[in-house]
Length: 167
View 1 (tube, rainbow, N blue to C red):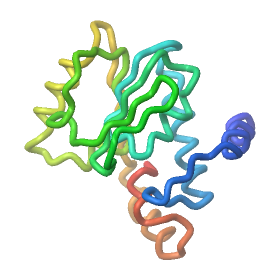
View 2 (cartoon, one colour; view 1 turned 90 degrees about the horizontal axis):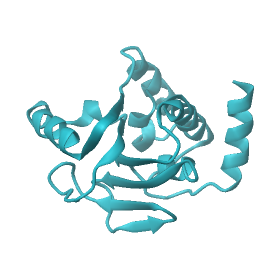
View 3 (cartoon, rainbow, N blue to C red; view 1 turned 120 degrees about the vertical axis):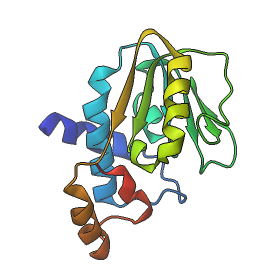
């Protein structure tokens, strides 16, 4: 845990704050801890598709670890490119048209926001864009987290928009 905190503080110096995705310090810590839990499952030099990428913080966090990455998010207004990563606006799978296949597909704090009738399309598209032997990584909230996050929001310790990310 101490190493994760030290890495967080170092990474925070170069933070890419975005007013569209407001974060307080606790937001950033929880997000960072989620990233450190997922990172070990992503092979070095992998190609990655991040569904529900937000402002791309996870891709920035993994910068240097990945060969290339694409993130898609419905809140983006335009394509953003940085290093070997691209963020594209849109709703997966309907707005995502690529001739690529990926080693890893991530959906962190996203699955619970996908309407049930859309899940089959998402699953089929993941299969389509996943390389043979690739993996899909999905994080979801713990059942007891929602009430705790509501309390943190009421106390203004976390921002409301970013609450859905902390599971």
